[in-house]
Length: 67
Ligand code: FES
Image (cartoon, rainbow, N blue to C red; front, side, top):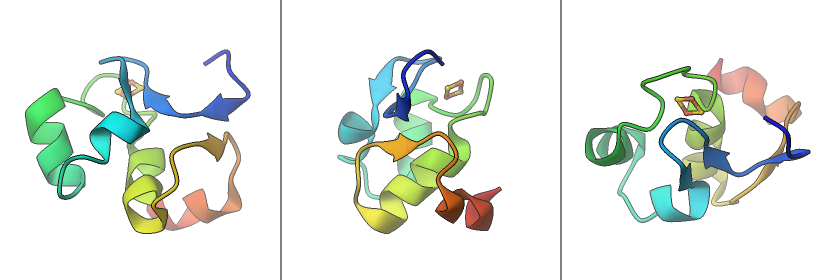
């Protein structure tokens, strides 16, 4: 990822703002396949649903709960 902030699933090119339209991680993944390729975004998407925020530092300490 080249941005300093993480704000999307790069593999399916869906922003967290878009993914937030779904009810939860499982629904977002079923609809968009987010998190099924490199899987690097999965902790961020889970944190997105937990926090309601749309972008994160790449090393956000809250990610530890989702890895
Ligand atoms: S960034 Fe989401 S699966 Fe690769």
